[in-house]
Image 1 (cartoon, rainbow, N blue to C red):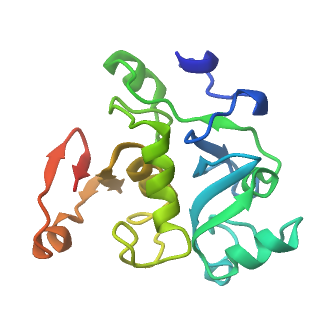
Image 2 (image 1 turned 135 degrees about the vertical axis):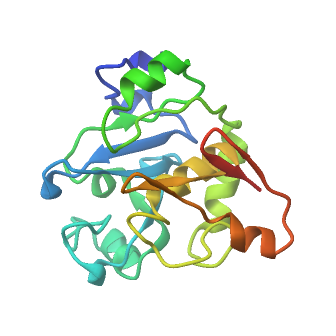
Length: 199
């Protein structure tokens, strides 16, 4: 797989990062129950979709305490923000979310509740970064139509959309949570395939 990603590990080194990469890091403060996802921009900067700090510390996507003032201020209200790589990682490992993986790899890698790869094709880095930057600083631009929700509107949804142009159908408590209705109501053309909604 790309840059040494295997079924057993998706950890990569900083020097391996490329602009437009979908990266993630497991959250130590939550007992490694979930990972936070974002899009690597460049110069150690990550575009991420995060909950507001006041939404609660345990399952908040961002920590209430940040080493740098700029990241702390940017993440305070939540939304799509740009932060430094160190604040994004919160001391955790840097992992690469792999795309275009074979079905056997997808099945073997995604055991449990958190995805680490997908069979969907990724778009070129320029398109990925355009989508991410278009959404930066906004709650209501296209994809980010509602407040951050850990189950139905989260950092995985944001990063997957940036990489593929598709809205990932979030799985929660064994049910598919569909957000196709509002998109169809707006008159957008929608294609559903492989667990994602393409707009």
